[in-house]
Amino acid sequence: MLRLIFSLSALAAGLVSSSAFAMPSADGARPARPAERGALMLAQDGNIDIYYDARGNRVLVDADTGKVIAIQPPGSRLDRRALRRQMRMQELGRAPAEDDDRYYLDNPDDMARFRRRQLEENGRVIPPPVDEYDDNSVDAYPPAPNNDEGYATTYPEAPKSDTIKRQPLNEASIDPEQPGQGEVLQVNPDAQAAQPPNTGGKATVDPSLSLGVRQDVAALQVLLDRGGASPGVIDGRFGSNVDKALAAYNEINGTNLKSTDAVGIQAALAQSGGDAFASYTITPEDAAGPYVASIPEDYSQKAKLDCMCYTSVTEALAERFHMDETYLKSINKGVDFNRPGTMIKVANFGRLVSTPVTRIIADKTKKEVYAYDGSGKLVAAYPATIGSADTPSPTGIHAVSRIALDPNYTYNPNINFKQGQNDKILTVPPGPNGPVGSVWIALDKPTYGIHGTPDPSKIGKTESHGCVRLTNWDARELAKLVSPGVTVEFVGGSTIADIGGTSTDEFTQQ
Image (cartoon, rainbow, N blue to C red; front, side, top):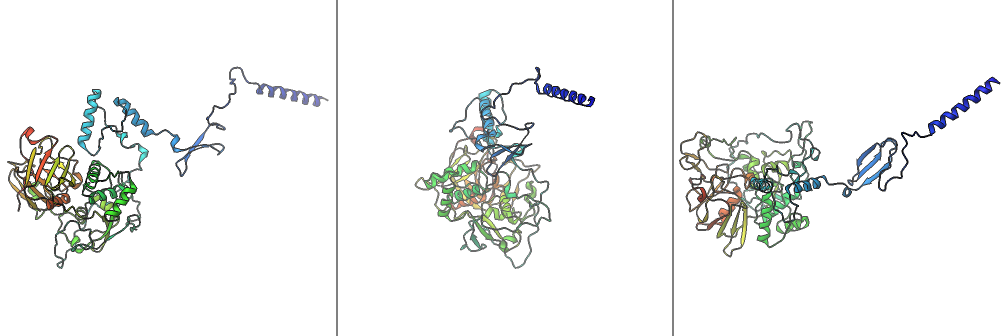
């Protein structure tokens, strides 16, 4: 009997306790409310995992239950770059416009002009809006490699042979029928298979995947070069030189091609010579040189060399095919350029311009040289480095007086700039790596002319000592189109008359 009474008492106490726990407290009571429209209903503690599927959709998954909560298409998420661009425009006090001025990161003058505009509009200097051009956040690009495997930094000595006779490296060697060149076959770069480089079991990063390099941009550069509008070096990168060349290409060919028109670019390539890239076989003459180990900076050391020759096979072939040397190596991974018979991929730039030129305009503001025929039609355009603030180029109209291929260079500190401790007149031997490159087109104004350069990748992005500097291949092409008496008109920018002085790019033909 006592056991029954004790059991009933315990049961009653349990019922009272459970009802007390079931009752909400006055302090912690929160009325239930329906979920807002579009809100996410999360189970357990509200933990979610975020994934991205193959189509770029953002997938939200409940971390506790494993159920898919929501799928957000890419267009529904906030574009961080667009937001930063808009905030930067608001900070500058202006809204973006379709016809707004364009500034190029690879052009120092554009960057200086951009900062001056900021100063004028806001009374203070604001750093250039980097996000306006690209996303440089930490997770935008993969980490840099920890070693240099895959990049050639040294070159073996050229093979010595008494049976090989040095022959000149002529321009436009892409044509299979041209004598003295290796066999060239047009290939589709997407279908060409390359042997993987020997990395010794270590991981490497493909140099062709470096920041800003694109195969379609390189194809556009090849097309522009074929059409008489030189983009400078073919390197697969967008920049001011490509934009200027595209505008000139449309004027020369009477088209309205845009850089985003992939179909139109491919059609134009097919009509003008086929694929943008071709296969070239390295010849014994290519491997034989002559080459020099390096080019010294000091002019007195330059004067002691036998020639200002190329320093490697890759440098020579890059110039022959109008390419950036680094880009040439990046699309030919693991290739031994010093071995005759090696097949490599090169730019198929086509034939050179052959229409005689009767008038040249050197636009110092645009950093571009325009060549016109007798009827006034534009037939060629080249990116150029034209003078500097310290040593501006001439003004007005001048004329071509003489043309010299592979000239030597006379350094005269009494007339030219003073280089280092050199206070005597020096004669630097000829060669493509000489101070004026491999071409000199003299003007009737003493010490001034149009010439080549040992650094083709810097054309249009650096300064000169008053003359007009082109890539060696562009200067050689122009030299074949002009003759003494052709007028050269300088327009835009500052002139030598503004500060007084002479050019420092003087030379003496050998």
